[in-house]
Image (cartoon, rainbow, N blue to C red; front, side):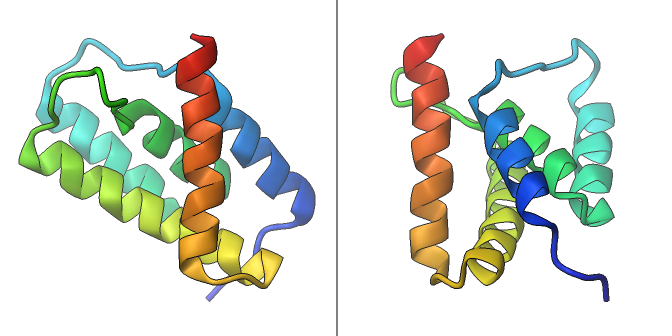
Length: 108
């Protein structure tokens, strides 16, 4: 077990969500391994990068099953940590994260 992230790390992670998605042009299997490693690292900013990169807006094409699974896994892990830090429930944390992601899409 590790300690929860500090408040400044949470704000950096939320800023990361608002950034532009950086999808490498490598094969999906390689990217999937990298995303999985970032999720399992437990680093909130790395997890935020995965959420940002795999997030799809309403007007974007559908994700593959494996992309969706990785996205859900990263979003869940990040939401649970934010919920614990902010002392809110998981659904409220997902709302905060989704709001940050939506702002990123609108400003892009």
